[in-house]
Length: 105
Ligand SMILES: [Zn+2]
Ligand SMILES: [Zn+2]
Image 1 (cartoon, protein in one colour):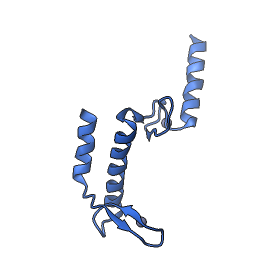
Image 2 (tube, protein in one colour):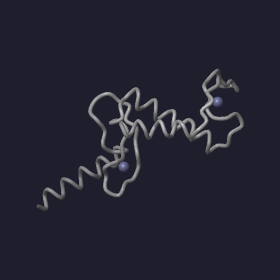
Image 3 (cartoon, helix red, strand yellow):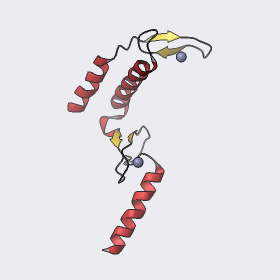
């Protein structure tokens, strides 16, 4: 599957180096090279988080907002019907636009 290959490519690009950290927040996982900069730490955590979302919820639960003029992406980890918009605001704006388009035709 192309999406799986893309995620595996992302995971392969970033050194993940998982380790348990405890700096006053209780033990939790850190990823990335020790001492890595913010961008590399964000890349490590994001690629791992996206891969976990694909494995736990399915690739169809990651998507790009369908609202006109919005280019945000989302990870839908809720149960129930699939989400198509990044936020309730985009969903409502699209519903209103669809209503007026139908009414005009
Ligand atoms: Zn930490
Ligand atoms: Zn949106």
